Image (cartoon, rainbow, N blue to C red):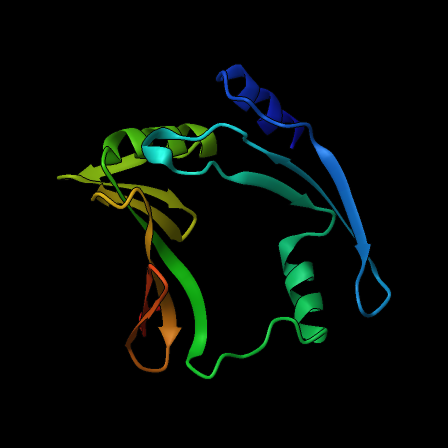
Length: 159
């Protein structure tokens, strides 16, 4: 967390202080984390991400959330986000900024720029919206397309 904070400051970004957070969950367990925000707006008026570090590893946290009933089985299937698609006026520059923030390589194909983060992707395509445009979920029992407000959701059966 501290190294990421220093690195982003070194890139000239306005980053907030690292703050400690904590709360007691419904089961009486203490949950702790550290968090900081990037206070700058990125190209295309995209909001910058925040960075959070939980005191437990992700697998343990996920199991605890399942036991508490906060993560539940979805009737559409075992869904997980595979891609977040941003339609922006300058996809190359947006991808460049996000790749610097996340220390991840940009792969370009035509006017589409993709950043792979593990088995997930941030995809930047040309458009006037300058916002998150679509989320693609995998693990659906059957394919389905939904829209909630301005964001499209594609539920796919691919794992």
